[in-house]
Image 1: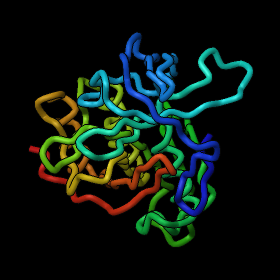
Image 2: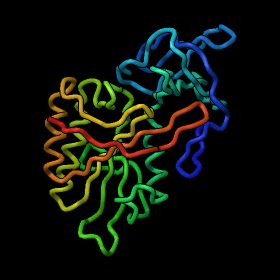
Image 3: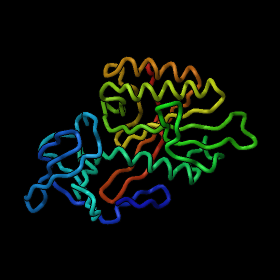
Length: 245
């Protein structure tokens, strides 16, 4: 379980180490523990997990005493290229929610009373929303958060596969800007060895095109790295966003 302390998410029960045997069926991973037994852990990442699923690699996992869980263990991190990388896709939203509530994202620090999982349109939701203050010239602000773990060169890259859902979110943010709202996309890079963020145009040209249109339409793009270790995870420096074309 993660506990939040001033923008630092600490694993209250500590993480255990092991070696990845295999990741399969999207939601499961077999891990060899330090006593050489094999456990099946929940994998909280349904994507391809590019460069993170090498058999034999060092991983860290948590344990939950929840009685309703089929798999009491959760795969939390992988040690890749001498760097801990967070694999839990729920972590970025928790980090950003804490940062928003604490006013730690400067351009959004004047907004208060953040709400989560806001319905937009008939069948969509965005991660966060706050009403505009009396000095704002917009109706309010919507924020969507994306998890990033893939590194190519020195740059964190997103997406690592085709993401029609991600493109849909960009289009929603553009529509909201056109309606007079402020819209922000935040990419949370769960590793600390990247110096910039870029869109992987070769993985999803449609997403790249929508990303460019979103910038031109007034959607704000932000990217942040993270300090990641088995002790916990925290947001760190803001990363520059490379040209998207």
